[in-house]
Image (cartoon, rainbow over all chains, first blue to last red; front, side):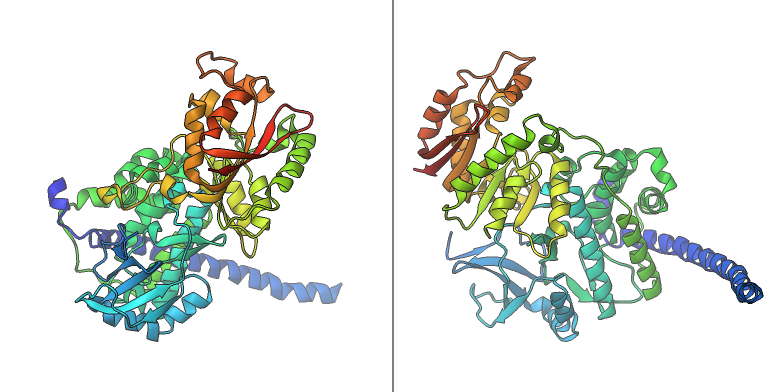
Amino acid sequence: MRFLLLYIDPGSGSYLVQMIIAGVLAGLFYFKNAWLKIKSFFSRNKKTDLPKDQSNG
Amino acid sequence: MAEYQHHPASFRDPSGFIFFAKGNYYRQVNQSYATDFERLMSSGLYESLVKKKLLIAHEISEENFGHSTDWYKTLIPQQISFISYPYEWCFDALKDAALLTLSILKISIDHGMILKDATPFNVQFYKGKPIFIDSLSFEKYDELKPWIAYRQFCECFLFPLFIGHYLKTDIQKLLSIYLDGIPVSITAKLLPAKSKLNLGVWLHVFLQNSIAAKNKSSASNNVHFSKQKLTRLIDHLENSIKGLRIDSSIKSTWNNYYDETILSSQYLNEKEKIFRELTEDVEADSALDLGCNNGYFSEIIAGQNVPIIAIDFDSQCINQLYLSEKNKSSSNILPLCIDLSNPSPGVGFRNAERSPFEDRGKSDLVIALAIVHHLVLSKNIPLPDVARLMSDFTKRTIIIEFVPLNDPKSQQLISNKTNYHQPYDVNAFEIAFSKYFKLERKEVITGTERILYRMGKV
């Protein structure tokens, strides 16, 4: 098995790995973005509340 | 050296090679690399990298020195006086070399090119900063393909850094064995289970290891990648590396030597005063500090505008020195992790690819402060052999400190041993060194029985 490996271009063996890792990262990126959107949705509400509070005070 | 000579480490890349001629190092660009070379020069990539001091600058010559049939161009790169190897670098030096490689990769992609290899041997340290020296590592970027050098980058940079970070251990010895990088299967076995909690480790080590083990026979060339995916991968590698560090709070043998030793302030002041007197009129273009500790005395020489290689076997001392020098705009000190009783050997193809430290370290001025007693009393190296070692490194002058047997530090070394080479005294020291050196000055450090010598090479 080791002998067979010697004839495979070392770079191409890592192509599949990079595909999978890029896939995982894309997934995480998607969730992170979604999470940030949710967070910013609520913090935006807070921010819009803030001037009102200040004007009241 | 012969009039025209191929560099023994420059043979792998069919794109060209380094050669030595007329007192300079040159790089030949072969015909096969012509298109990529022109792309590097015309895309603005070369200019951008050189301007940022990331890539070594070169001039182009039309002279075919070796009358090579494959010749396209000759490059005259900026000359680097001392070549060091990754297995001599401290943790943060390797980390900076890794981050440099990734920065270059990102800038290359912006210019339509990519790095075809990612080995730390393509990086050198110049005036305290890492710089990429292989101008032939760039090729046209194909957006549909992943990074050909990803695995090499992992094995040569990422994995050693992970191991240093999680095992809190020196990585130099491992790197000196695995010259082409530490294989993923070995890294997976070495890293502790808790490291799996880190996404970077899990993806690049454990996931890669399991995929590599399952897909031994398939080369899987039919993949479609994208620039966005690659950028995300590089950013992730970059962020994973930025978070890695060795814990400098762990007390090593020597990292607090000057801070805590009872000999500290008065002794150090006196020693510095004599040291400055002994070195003020020394003429040197190169210097070497053997057992430099925190680099206190290297700084003095560096301040006199002499480039100095500062070595110590304690990698934490070297790491601290590297970090403090890195923050300066320019540094004359190159800190390296080298054990004087077992310096880097000649390794690689024909044992000539990476030359031994003894061949590279020869310097006009050698500084050997408070190290002789370690070599004789701890390492059991006889005084005549120590003198010979010092002579091998010294081209002109040596500043050397003799620590006598009754010194508390010497006593500490022999407290549990009796089998060291005797006699170990001033007389034996002077006789041993007189074979290779001529005594120029000799000063006792007040308050101690330690002696500083300045000797000239015979």
